[in-house]
Length: 634
Image 1: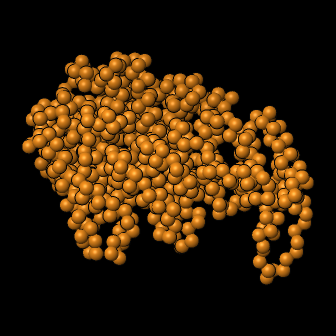
Image 2 (image 1 turned 180 degrees about the vertical axis):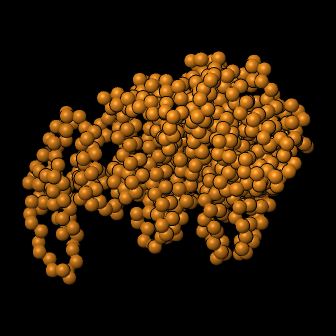
Image 3 (image 1 turned 45 degrees about the horizontal axis):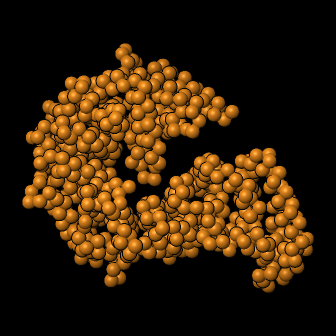
């Protein structure tokens, strides 16, 4: 019934979308790209098929059909642009671009001939973009001051066209679809891509675009470079040389925005390894040149740490080191295969410089938070390529997760993300630190110092990341439900931040419950004793004594506990509810009379004077009464 309702809602969204040519409905394209498109990955086949049908009507037909309304086409481009914007948003999920790529793969499998019409549509839009600027390339002031170059409609089509071509390049597969082959077979000259890159380069780096237009240009530039990398063998030699020299110049000058550094480095590396461009002295001379430049920048920053200086150069140097090290990285690479792979081995001095930036301060001078955050990501990438380094650095990451004295949520978040990646690669090395990772589900709740509102939001982001990475590791069987990890997940469903609580609820009641159907029924009764911290019952002792994750210092109100119980009950079958009722009767109601210590739940609390502090016995007496009260409330 739920999936039938969803399918009807999807159809309603499409019917509303058909009114684009008569009236404008604000944000409908954003709703479609954020809420409808990801359902193509839904486990319910009929729901996924419905989204595929709507995808064809909403995106494919408007972009490939003839005599389509300009407003309907504009809506299709806007959907693509929205997905492009979300794919680089800080803290955003990758579902949008993944769903779009998946949808295009299915569409191309269903109708391979559609690629010809799509490429021609893309070429028309990109050539139109190039034509607008072609006469003014030499006049930077004219471009910067002319508003026609940054009209919303033009930016939407440009971003959408580049991103669509980027998605098609990601669909490339030697067994089914290849972008380079499609260019050749459809007689499409790729020089329009080269020309568009020249214009984007000029607009971003030479014209100082406004803050409002810069994100759109960055999205387009990133997609353009990704496409060039895919069709690199079709690029003429003189153009390859020109682009390669330009990329190298910007990389070495650290002028590249962090969002573009991965595309710049990977495209430049592809040029160097695929063609004869820039191969001087040795095959990997270009790597040494970039790494030496980064080393100088990192050393210069630390040498002048006591002076006031900009962080942007060192941030980009750190980012560049990480991206260069990741060239040729294969998730499945093993030690016996390393000899056949391209692998950058950074100098020990660079590693030591990056390690130094993990510290809070050097000789009494604090290292900026943003620099430390980038340093954690960079050292994490270095660890992915070197197991011995990972062994040496693992305590840096774990220590940061335990840190509560100095508020640095962004660093803590990055340390958590690095640990999750290392857990996939070196499971035995990281699994022992599951407790430290699980604590991030309640990150910031025990910070005793005064923190800023910005940091409160940042800690919410840490908790989101904890939910996402831990659930991903659980679903892939890299970690198991050990100790009280499940109860920490339950506590996250009643987090003070609405977004965190909703995310935890959706993931726990969705994929995690689907993977382990008895998750709620087997842990329901234990949750009463854990959440009330009642150690007078053997159930609490057994759960709390199990090795793994602890649940100390987490206080839940009556309302929060009831919300958790109701959430679990709503996901139990009738048979499971009967089993839970029977166990509650046996362990709680029966335990109140059978177990000598827990029996105090049936006794009234002694009257204490206001000035007298509660003893441990009184606190446990209150906890036992709360367990009994929660049971009767259900």
